[in-house]
Length: 373
Image (tube, rainbow, N blue to C red; front, side, top):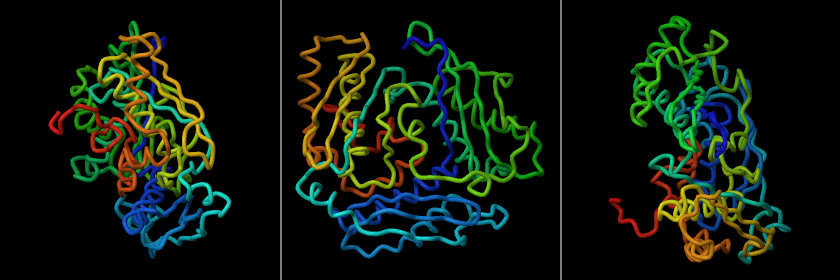
């Protein structure tokens, strides 16, 4: 880590792109709940007073796609007509079965797509995640909690965070700037909003990670006003927040999104497997920083390439690290799905606040740890 300053952003659960991610993953959950062998590849586009759902679903289950979408939209607080996108807005569903040219390879245990996937871990935080993205997720979660619990009762759905962290010798030592954006009722002034967010959200998050940030270093709603958020202000699309979903720009990304895909799609499952391996390498003290890469071919069971980079932080020989890493998990598509229990309906909850650094997910398990740590 050679940057002196590094910034990452996150977005609230009600952000337009995250609305789409959560609807897509709610479809995955609905299918897997009824049919563990179901195949899903669904994307959504949210805009002013309209949602489009498109993609492929192959399953024995009966699934009401529109009802799933309306439930997610309502859960996220989009129930007021003034938002111009609600649980009563029109929905277009364009979903059909998976292509037989793809399914013939997947049915035999092969990967549902080609590509390269990366997993990353570092010892900057207890979650073994980079500090900037960890803080950014905590801030938007804090804003969403303040809205849901009405501790800041002027907030409306949607929102973003950004955190600039100062590094010295590769370690985070201070927070230089916190940027928040969130829609709110017009009756609340910008100064009132800024003070409430600082007291109820920023100070609490920074204290948890032992940083001290003054209000002078907080920016709220950079244009000066934001009253209506959501898809009527900025369209949303499944899979457009891939850096938010992963490591905040620290570490590589293969380019494929996660949401809306069943685990035969290695864009998702192999990225989870790579994180699992990288995290365990760091958790077991074999390196301070680690990135794992795997490469798959559509229809093939095993990766055609795999590699580990510890960025000069290794605490053991390369051969020892590789022997430990490749013994953790069978990297065939079926081996990943079975080893990480990926046919369970856990995916909607991944689609906000990041897919990594959260102990409730099986790819975050540290081998050898007891359930109580």
